[in-house]
Image (cartoon, rainbow, N blue to C red; front, side):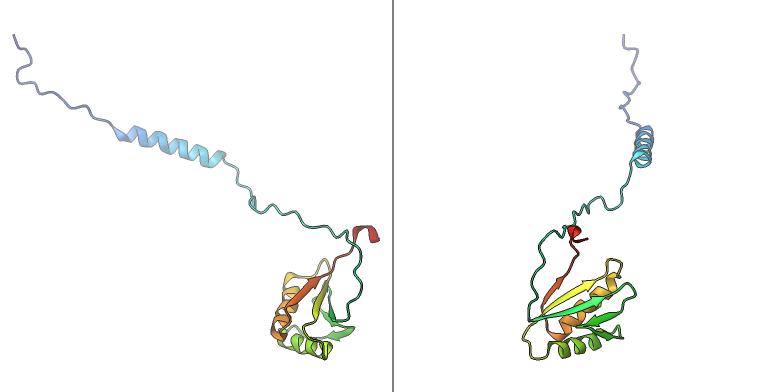
Length: 140
């Protein structure tokens, strides 16, 4: 005897709604429990200035930058923040030197922009050799 005559076989069905609910709960849990650190990819070890003092070179131009963003080029104060004017003062200080070394003596609390202005002025003047000075830790 066939009791299932007219009865069609049901295809199995996978209900995705509970699966999506579980995945969303897991995603929310991971987002809440994850800690985000700022600048984690920028682990920088700054160099230390423990080298001996270099002797003065005759083909260098010393430029000082203080915390207020004022400039002094070879003991001459310059009252401008325009890189074009700074480059003219650099050319005057260089005189007849060919490709002098620009030595930037920036205060530790000087703004980044004031140092960049000196670098931009050196580029405008056509000087490509730029260096920075640092105070030795043992020289105090």
